[in-house]
Length: 370
Image 1 (cartoon, rainbow, N blue to C red):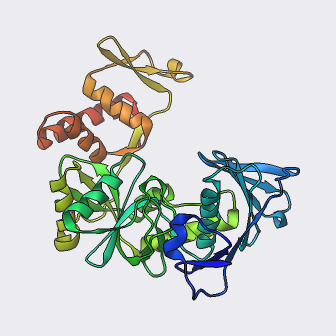
Image 2 (image 1 turned 90 degrees about the vertical axis):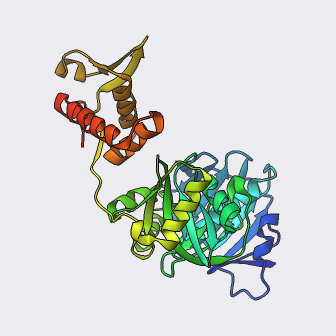
Image 3 (image 1 turned 180 degrees about the vertical axis):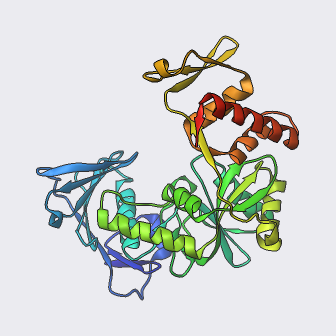
């Protein structure tokens, strides 16, 4: 059996994907996760589907002593995981190439969470001996920002997609799985900050409040909700991570000059980071739909709201843009201001005054709440 080490997790198996080779070791402790293979087909009798994700489904039996089944929905592979997460058995029958790596990743990530280590959706780079993790939803620009730091600052890519973070020590490390980025680095560094990337007209860093950080990280950390004790472990780790590592929100336009500016603020001029203040969030009230008819924009009441709200509201293009944003998610005033500055050529002071007038009108006629 070959042995591999990822931080506190030692894994033994007879064969590993190529990406695991940098993590192979000769001096590992007693393996905490053993991976075996079997050609026996999976019998789903008594198993029920607990969770469905884009690429993987999770199954469980009524008796928890039966463990878990992970199904790779793309490559038709299956992996059984023991209740204590220490033994994984990959079912080779019918599995296509690529299934083993994905299911092995799922077992290892669960094992790391059991050891108190979190899996963060982020592009993580190391510069001057410290790491910065750029995070956010897909398409936010975190990979672009990390690549710019590598190009302009000589930073080293530690992980392009899913680094492992230890909240107790504040250490972040590379892992042998990394999505489309294909970065497999067996290295670790103290984590200076986690940075949520957002589009903005100028470079600005603001520290999140604890509440904002909890809400943000809950969507960027792996929290295995199908396993209640393990999910509780992950949520406990989330709280410890917030207490240990600063969580910032970065507004920037995404060009190379803003990448350099964000580095200067974070590493050279931290006094320019805005202090955390609770942002007032707002959203479009339920029961409204924003529609465009020819060149006109309307806020139309729907369902039970038709009787309560007399008629529709005629909107201009700017108001419609704001309400569409508010219908997709909760937004702060700062979020909406940056939206206007990105979409329209207008001075910040003028945009801010117009925005305040529009938001006041929205509240008065009952279109928004929060």
